[in-house]
Image 1 (cartoon, rainbow, N blue to C red):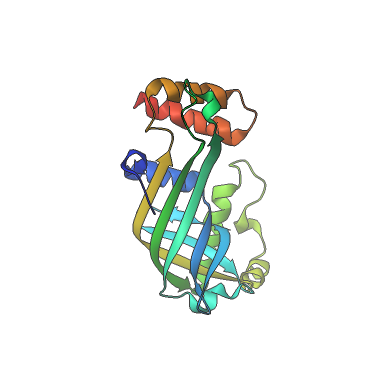
Image 2: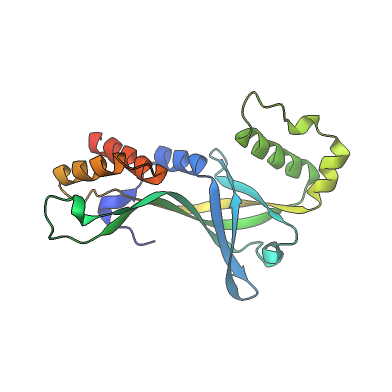
Length: 203
């Protein structure tokens, strides 16, 4: 990924937090000799350095993905930045965004217990703490039957590239003008970018 020095994310804690908060990712590999992508949630195991997830079995991407070096993209908030917000009109439009690229080798997980544990962790992450739904309360034969419809995998993380393009290459007063405009928006992407810009101005 092309990353100008102003925008590079190299703080491991920030990277891990971003993955956990923006866990619905896009997984790219070569399938039948062509680029192929699947959109799916992934879980990060920081201690092991792995991402965990699963394909729907009818999605044939899994059939030739084992041992490939794959790319996973985690996309955060993003928004248009208008030069009409600046103190000068000698400027051009741009786009602010946050994104991570994770590279690694994928391995299919076939052991029944490992599959169940991966599914259980996925449910625990997304269900609210007080949710009435828990996978352990579902009939085991039903879960086993449904599990036949998926293919679990794990990705050993080899490299992570992160970029937070938040107008850091502009003067502080201009960044503050951008933040003001974004905060007046009803769009959640705009509001989130404004929050991130304010945070990075304080650092």
